[in-house]
Image (cartoon, rainbow, N blue to C red; front, side):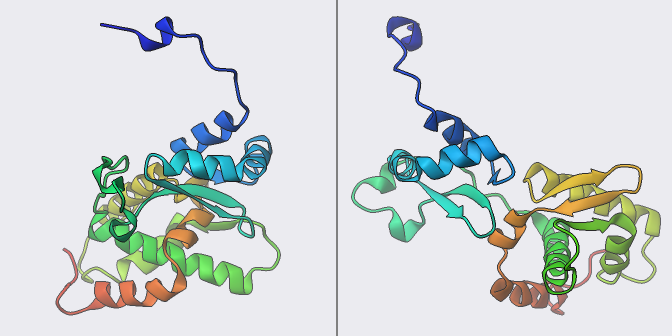
Length: 202
């Protein structure tokens, strides 16, 4: 077995590597000031670097976030279709998808109505009230709360939410959810969840 790093001198360190690693770890937000400034200072080079492996750097300066997405099927031409996909497509399932819709609604209300706070924060009880309406009236509330909490943890793994206050069970809705679920998709997704064909889970 050959250890390539041991057989070669490391290339000269370049600061853009800090932003590259953060992007590979997930969403990079502007409040991570050092990495964010490195990203903006090296955006062209980072774009070229990641495109070589079929990844697109998405930078939203207005919202203050950046992330990677894979080239779509229609973009994978000129040999790029041969590249393995780095990010696997995984289905969220009904309950996590439902929670995305509820949280996206909360974020829309936050942008429209809450002029005093910089963060969109929602408590578990408020979410539970909305969550229960998608389930049969006879559903056990304790079980529904457990399922809601499990879905929150699932979205936390995806960086869509982060625990804001453990004692009061409050969660911050991160801006990446807005980027991943724009308003034009929200109504369609809600309609699909409420359609008779979908049905309410038990």
